[in-house]
Image (cartoon, rainbow, N blue to C red; front, side, top):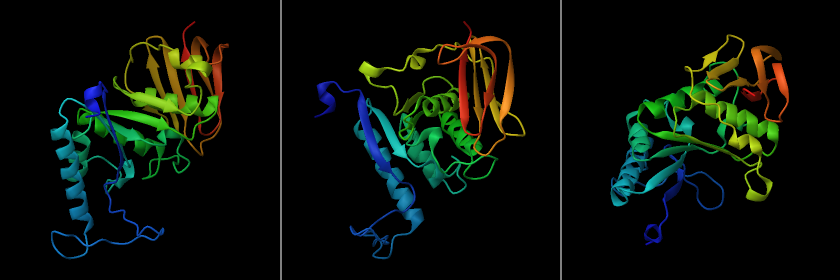
Length: 246
């Protein structure tokens, strides 16, 4: 009924692919599986949830479906688990609710690292789906730029990004209008935690959490999101830069 009014799609909240149930008072409980009469197992929970998302897809075949799901519900924090893949493929977009500005993300290559999130996004793209990096906690220009850099480092085209900064029409952040052009290749990551991706009309840089401060020579003159012309940038830990050719 709602889609018939002309809406583009549906946002499906709390697509939790690991068993997560409370008793209404804040305590975690394990529910009884009505199909078996026994306590719910995580394997069955994942299968039921994947089936539910597939039923939703079948019921609304022409709607754009966005799943607000948890990237770390995959057993190895990747997109390789069969039920996780079923859920992803039942959507058009996988939404990362805190984006790259998630305070729990680390440097390095471990299970909670920015690098692992990027590889999960690669897996989503490998399944033919796209990603929304919804950095809802990012309420400053610096935080929004960090999330934007992460999105540009991973995007294959067709992805979206949002930060809780400068999105209102009456307080629009001009950096959202920057056009870096086509990517000239995939992202690179240095051993000390600097991500970089070059575009036809710009560069995206991200210095991961916990990394050392770095000064990067750009090999030319570029414009920052604040409009300054620079030939190098200095990034502290958990800082990004989006640069365009003037």
